[in-house]
Image 1 (cartoon, one colour):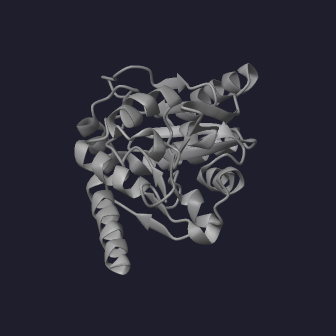
Image 2 (image 1 turned 90 degrees about the vertical axis):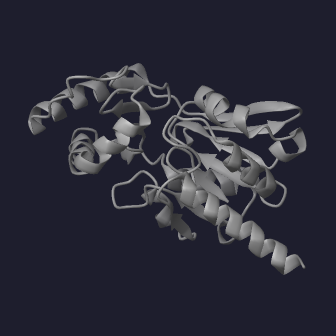
Length: 251
């Protein structure tokens, strides 16, 4: 089972809650679980792993793909090991910032008067723009999304015009992520097949941005079953239903 993180397992840049952690621990007893999210590995550690509190034997069934699968970590020999990482070059990062400047000018886009933290963040393997800033409260990001998703998609489309050799993805509530070309959720699913040894027919994907232009939509190209959720609450119901169904089948 493959999950998006922000908006699917937890609210954007928020901690995994106790109920979700309990469900995921039970799921890890029965399934291999992968998480592909836009945040950096340190955020995965703080937001996800520290709250999951899974025993070591279950962690061997968990596979982490931070910054939209530009990096991959798995648990082995008593600790988390980096399998690969694909960093952007200084030249690529400079080009991304210049492209954002051009895009904002072309669209006559004005940033909100009040922002929370950096608008454009260098994540090493990925550069991310957040319309309200990287540290904006979740409720404000959700409100912004209600009224501004069309402009976010327009920014992403214009950025793609300026950066044809990079991947541009609309993510979360307010975010646009830029990675190397071809690195997206489809790429991440391919890496799961390669490194974990699970065939596509045995995978399913759950995410909150499967709409056209959303950063989860690339998963649809793999042909695996994909389930759209509208937040962690719906994800909990889906996991609980799956666990209940498996229990009935076994009995």
